[in-house]
Each structure stands twice: as C-alpha cells, then as structure tokens.
Length: 157
Image (cartoon, rainbow, N blue to C red):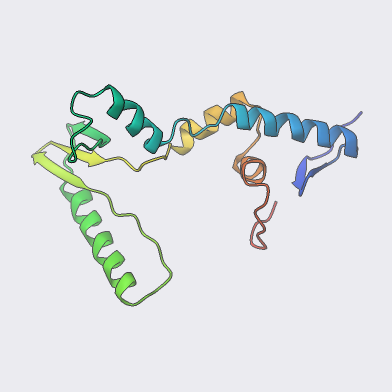
C-alpha cells in the first residue's frame, strides 16, 4: 500500500484505511500512556522523598527543584523575571484571564546563581526525543494523542 501524507483528524489518520489507522492510533496511544513522556509528577516525587527523609514529618519540610548556574551572569534574567512578576500582579488586579508563572532567580555572585524549576515540565528537546522513541512524528500528533478530548478550532493539522 502506498502511504499518503499522514494527517490525524479526530481518530483517523488520512491516507490509511480506517482499520489500519485505528490500529496504529491505538498502538501509539497505548505506548504513550505506558511511557508517559512527562515522567513522575512533582507531587508524587515530593511524597516519595518525604517518606525517606529523616525530616519528612516536620511541618516546614519542603522540596524545591533548582538549577545551579556557574559562569553565567543572571542579573538580566532576574530583572526580566521581576518584570514578569509585576505584569502577573497587574493582570490579576485587572481580573484579566491571562496566566503567567513567574519563578525565582537568585544571583549568588557575579557569575553564578540559582534558578527555580517549573514543576512537571520538560524541555521541548527532551519531549521530542521521547516522542521519537515512541514513533510519534511531531508535537501536533502528540497533542492529539495525549489530549484526545481536546476540541480546538484554532489547531490546524
């Protein structure tokens, strides 16, 4: 059978007969669910580590993920994040439906600092590498498989 351009539309991949496209789609969905590309959630990671920590019973116990940077001047990034935080407060005060996620950046010296990680997030590069192993072609195909009930009129396949 000659393959045409594959376009996922709902639950059918155009260019294949319905049975074959459904089988392929079901296989990819199963593989995606068994190998969640986002891995362990931050919440479950916190609970797993809290149980093993000798300080886990303390009320003030908290887990934080940080990136330690050396050889980088983080002052511009810190200033940019302060602006984003200000915009976030302005948007909330104006009751605008705009969501920002400011995170902490702390300069600990002229060429070093700490950057707070966003929970339950991975880089696009990491996601693309995981999707390649699962034989998922692109982010659009991933989105349609991972969020099958999403109804968007703005998404062009």
